[in-house]
Length: 126
Image (tube, rainbow, N blue to C red; front, side, top):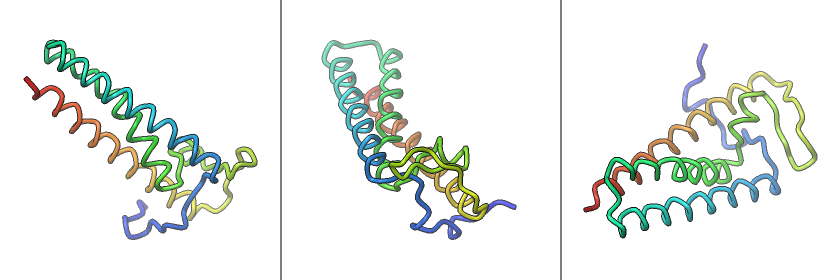
């Protein structure tokens, strides 16, 4: 049985403040790389097909920033684990694992959509 969106509670987190900072940093670096790559590609008139490579750092940026915002690591959620800054630990509560996995899918979906929009904008520029 698949949990619904309303099933996800904001209390379903699996990373602590230190891990949140790591993901925020990853997101900011990815965002800087995506913006920089997009600027260089447009400025130097890179062929439109080559501009799709902006997708990768944009996706990394989305993953990092959305994971930090939601305090949920998608890789840990997939393994049914958490890291509250004291090392990785298994989660025993199946209900919490299900909540985290729903949240992880939502994070990944939002990161993919964001990266696709940034890439489309970069490709659309003359």
